[in-house]
Structures are given as C-alpha cells and as structure tokens.
Image (cartoon, rainbow, N blue to C red):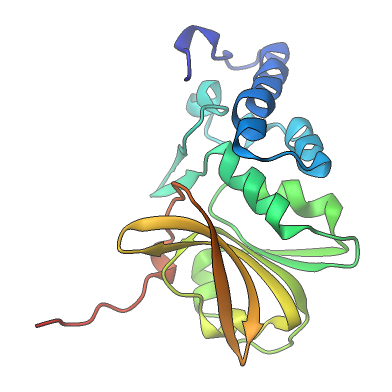
Length: 205
C-alpha cells in the first residue's frame, strides 16, 4: 500500500533514500527478489532520476510511473525480477531494449562486461547479424521479438523480457533455439507494453 503522506518531496534526498529502503523491504523481498546484487543495485540507483520531475514524489510507488509519450517506468518488482532472472556476469555482452527511462540499463551497467542500449523502434528495424550478445533484456512486454534482434544473440544467449498474450503480461526468460526465441513464463506481472513489438493484426472470421 502506498501512503501519500509518506511519499518524498522533490529534492529531499534523505526521504528518497528511505523510500529506496522501503521499496526493498516492502516490495522486492516479499515478491521473492532476494539476490544480493539486485538489492544492492536497486538500493544504489536513484529511481527518482529516471522519471519526469513532476513524478519524482511517486517514483517508488508499487506500480508503473508515466514518462510521457506513451512510455512508462515499470514497477520496482518488475525490474527486480528481471535483473534477478538475468543473472548477469562480468563476461556478458548485454543488449537492453530501453522502455523509455534508462533505469534498467543503469541497474545492469556495472554487472556486465559491455552494454549496448537501443530504443524499441530501432530494435524493431534492426537488420540483425553479429551473434555477439550473450544477454538480451527487453524493458517492456512484447507480443513478438523482431528477427533482427534475435539474430544479435550468440549461441546460448539468454533472453529476459516481458510478454503479452490476450492482454495478459508476464515475465519470461529463455534462449534461442533453431533461430527462434524459446521463452518460459516466470511470473504474471503488470508490465508496460511496447507497441513496436506488437504482432501484426490478422482478420478472423
């Protein structure tokens, strides 16, 4: 439950630090996010710096925060579970499809060997090739993952993404098998959808 009176006001760094601690204790841990590296990063990164100024007071609420232009910063538990499922290592060559905030990329940055960040529209138009990415993280829910993006993955490269099917969004993890992403749902979560990764609409009779 989010109590309005306890939300930090803009510029109150002590209150933001308290909000980060409360996020860890009341949102992340009860949801099964207990990996030390995840809690450390989410306790270090100032989430309020990744939302518009008028939304900073609610940056640590337990739901998505609007960024404008149809973009959202997902709820803390979404990014916590994504990072925990990713299990990044220093040798990883990571690629993040940014949902609009830059927050997930900043959480991941010091945990991997290299990091490339691209916008959803660029990812949707990617020609592919290379096969150099060992960890792909998509900050949003996708109906389909573009072929060009999948082609960037190295053999046995890992994928952590949101998915959407029949209006239900889930966190999913997987790898590439026979040139296609093979994903396993992990948890049903409210994850902002990426319209660039929507499947083509087909006529039905």
